[in-house]
Image 1 (spheres, helix red, strand yellow):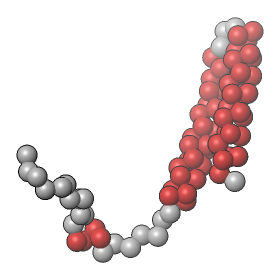
Image 2 (image 1 turned 30 degrees about the vertical axis):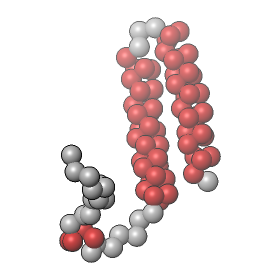
Image 3 (image 1 turned 180 degrees about the vertical axis):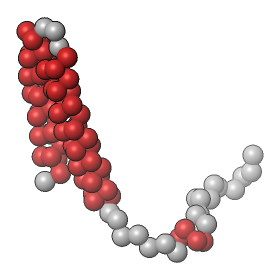
Image 4 (image 1 turned 90 degrees about the vertical axis):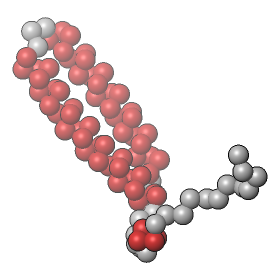
Length: 83
């Protein structure tokens, strides 16, 4: 082991010359909006399949209601943090 302190990693010169003005808040909010879009598409497909392919509607309707309730709560939580 050397007695010298560790030096921080320096990126290669071509990477340090790139100037990207993308703040972390823009990246995080964009990521969560993409997750929201995926979640909405998944919910539509899941509800369709539950209604069309379910042989027992007494189980499908409460499952749909629970999924929609949890989805709305989670989406509301995510969006409230982004505003």
